[in-house]
Amino acid sequence: MSMTEYKLFAQRVGLVGITNLIVNLRGLILIPILTKTLGADAYGVWSVIMVTISLLSPLALLGLTSAMIRFLAAEKDKRKIQEGFYSVISVVFFAGLVLSLIVFLLADSFAITILKDIPAAPLIKIASVVILLQALDLASLEFFRAFGKMKKYSGLMLLPTFAEVGFVAYFVLAGFGLFGAVVSVIISRGIVLFTGASFILKEIGFRLPKFYGLEDYFKFGLPLVPTAMLGWITSSSDRYLIGFLSSPQMVGIYSAAYNIGAIIGFFGAPLQIILFPTISK
Image 1 (tube, helix red, strand yellow):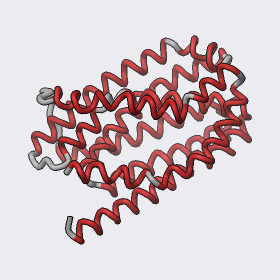
Image 2 (cartoon, rainbow, N blue to C red):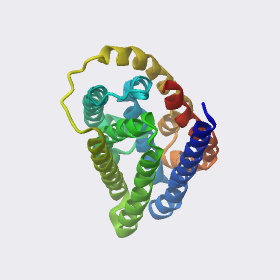
Image 3 (cartoon, helix red, strand yellow):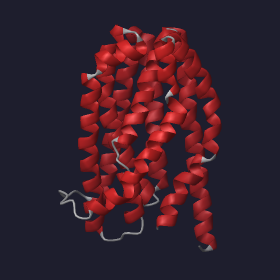
């Protein structure tokens, strides 16, 4: 790498670092809004729903976005970029749709077993849509990460943060409760998906994929799925355990403290986000 490339790398790390800091503040801002207005029980239900989404949305990616970065970071041929990206996004769409349907169908059992709160079942059914939307959002974000377009990447990271905080604050304070909070997440994810899709269409246009080379993507990506699962187990599965053994209120109290402590994690994330596409290229 030349000195110019090192400087660019450092600038991108700094940009993503600032973005991650702001994104991490979203949880801190939402804690008082939700807990003071709705109480610890409702915040516990919210936390379990968000943890479920944080598990299943990346799972819907099937490791293909990592493969996309690996194989497309240095690619210049527009047709190959189109083929790779649209093949990945198509698979992610169907995987996300299947996972959303599973959560929708199992919502009643989930509410009774984990949350011990039958009225939460409709919220889980509504939130199941977020799994699909967030999976597509994540896949779109990785497109910009792959090609080093970190300003757009950072912008699309910040957009749902501001949108979610704004909509949640409005709907919750207006009296729509946890239903309004969940709907707010759907709206914010939809806005990001539309914005990201607009940028991508402007960049590379559109063509129907023929799924050429997708086998190589799966060979690279699928072995990474257990790693993502294990990471989620160590960081988030405790909410389920607390909910099963105790109550949504205890989940809410635990999640509030955990989210405050987790802010320290943003220090290492920027380097990891930038390093992989740089090495791949």
